[in-house]
Image 1: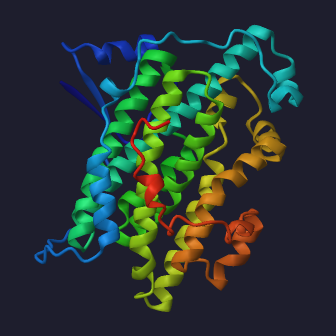
Image 2 (image 1 turned 45 degrees about the vertical axis):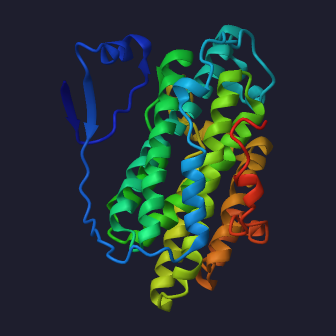
Image 3 (image 1 turned 90 degrees about the vertical axis):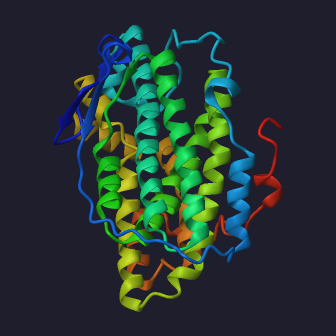
Length: 357
């Protein structure tokens, strides 16, 4: 096995011919970017069950385990897009100039970019969850973080297989998503890892997965996302319930630091939805394409859908402080603070059998 160490994430699109050599069991090449973290771990010598909610979420995680190799039927044929479909890019001059074949290629790249960001985000979640198992202070939070680590490993495996076998090429991680993950992974405060991952990244991912599932043409993607969504719902619920009491123990200064961090993560998360790498691949003016996408009604609606999941959770744990409310309002997402939060656990929904629908 050969490990190639990089100082930063690769920026090129990797096509099937580039990916295939790394799948050869006789020559596995791992491309690794090294990061350092001042992580402070903790033992817990109490071993007591202090919070029945967290214990029950942990038990559900064990009960509702799944295997992407066995529980998803990968043998169903791919139904590729063969002609342009109506899309908000129809009004963008650079897209209008494309031939039909080029438009189909663009749509394939947009889909690949989205799936690639899901994959990279889940690897980030895997790394953060493994850190939480080390640094979370309570016995039950360590157990739950460990079970979430396994969940995230399954998600990485599933998205990677989907991209390798049904798309055939892969986009690099977007700069905004990478910035958020770097901040979370290299911060020494365990609760900021909880806030950044469990509430913001996982909350946005949960909404994005649901939206993608609703629009999925591919039954394999539909089934795979259904299984992943069940896991993510538990993860977000765990984060809200665990942090709700902890935040109240912080000083006002500490609370303001967390509130500012949450705002910065949300700000970057708006940028992570922009497929800049696709603009560049097709030779578009990045600033023009970015401005067009941000002003499109579909993009604004999608953005609202995502943050409807995040803002009420931040409000519930007490991180929509006076110092950040105006900033969130300028982002256009403060209006969602009174939406239903994930702190009110719907045990019947979380406990549904995996294949009930």
